[in-house]
Length: 177
Image 1 (cartoon, rainbow, N blue to C red):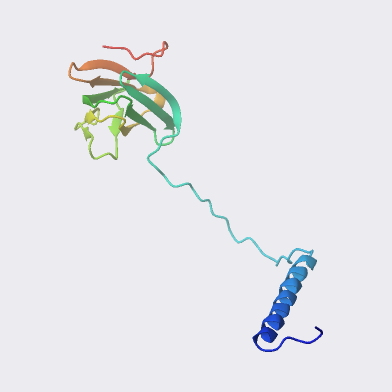
Image 2 (cartoon, rainbow, N blue to C red; image 1 turned 180 degrees about the vertical axis):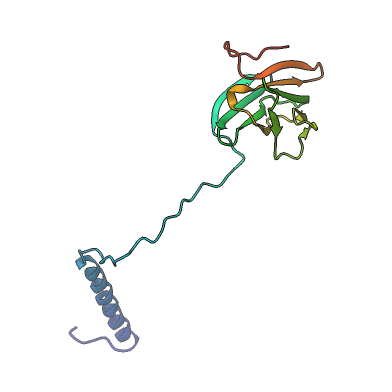
């Protein structure tokens, strides 16, 4: 029993011992290093501000129901005088003939959008959205005026119901006109 194995087993047990020796040595060697790597002298030569990517999603400031729609009004960009908003159909049916109109005391409020399916009037005070499918949304913006200085009215449906979309009434309901 004290003899080394002969034949193919001779190499298998030798390689097995070498493997155990190397594995054990590397594990023990890794554990013995208790100090962190030395930091090199690094001089800051500048800094970079990384801005998050722009998306078509709003950071919601106000969300409320108006008829079959949910209005999500974003925060106002005071510097550029832009306020983005989203109009989402919350029903399971398409809502036809959706038209928005924006007004402001000085008449400078205008609509803007990146959505190619929305037709803006020549003066950009009317946005003809058309049909809004079930659970679908449209994103627009109001330009040239701060958020507290414009109103948005909406006409929709086959019966052309008219409501004030923004600002929300104090009782939480949109008003019909």
